[in-house]
Length: 528
Image (tube, rainbow, N blue to C red; front, side, top):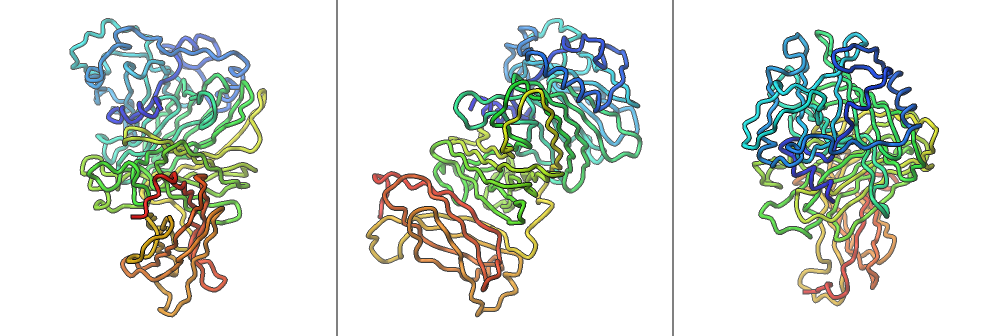
């Protein structure tokens, strides 16, 4: 919970948690870039170095910075600003520029950053002249080997706005054409939602390749390090209406990793149409994402609305060679949020497109209780069926799409537009027992082409309880259909898994809506 608090608390600085390694690691002759010395660099070299590093015990460098930076106040840390005229490649014809984040406050583990030109890497040594400082707390003389906290990228269409940022552990963010930050991705998740402490691998070093004049893509490499594993990462960022990131990963475990999360996504959900548990705020909805979308290896489309549960909740969707998954913000209506400060309706969705075969495993969804929007409480990732073993190499490749819409949608299938829930029963009639109502709106596909006499059926299954009062009828306001039903949960408080889709005859008309409902205790089942 502390990590998730920091990520949102630091949104003004692009949010995250603790950061990576100091330049002490780079004292070896095999390392590229110390001082101004150019050293050969390639992704093949980085993979080799990560493999070698995995044979040695993990060394933490957290807190290796002057006391003045450790104790700096939030306001004074915010007063350290990178000077735009010192941005990397600002004096060139590059379509990209890079700015660096200063260490301090929550960012206490130095990360080394290198510039790569023509296959040669040079470390960017710390330079206080890169920053303006308007704080009241004196920082003192800072050493030249201080390092940095991370970096942000800017694009020639608007150098004043961020394109992407890598800051905190292995977290990174990007924007689409809305130029709006929202949820985060990270390099790797380890032991998320299991007993014991979650491990947060760190990007301990970065290499930024200077783009050639006219190039519209930028390449970044990163070294991952943690007690359980090392890793080599290669990123290719291609801006557009959707930011497209190609990611290649090579992992070299130090120990067995039973709960590895590949391509993890992190988001926030406090309150929405289907979950009013924390609805004390004047704004109707507060979330970065409203659902988990999945395209299974068999081609089935699923939509799982997110919730802010009363207790930690873990769901696993077993699959073989998934075709994609993502945390999406489908609801783009400002009126549903009424937030003219952070504009939740503009938050980017992120879609993970696996490359190659990922084998057997599961798409895992973790939902953590939160009392407000400062907590990132949603995590989704791919979990390989087999644990990752030491002294092995594991390769994964995937593409991340950041933007308003996922790059792929169900062909000829309608999608879920909204999920609403409330007390069941028949209005005007006395309720004799407790039930819970679900109203799910679908639009798109061929729904708006159906005739008024089309016999559309809601196909519903529940792991427990009794389904009653079902219906599926046209909803002209969205040119789609609304499916409704009540669920009588019985006496148990155990979660109930529900699935539903609409069909005409034997033909599916919609994606599959998947939901997990947790009945309230008997003492809270008011019939009104």
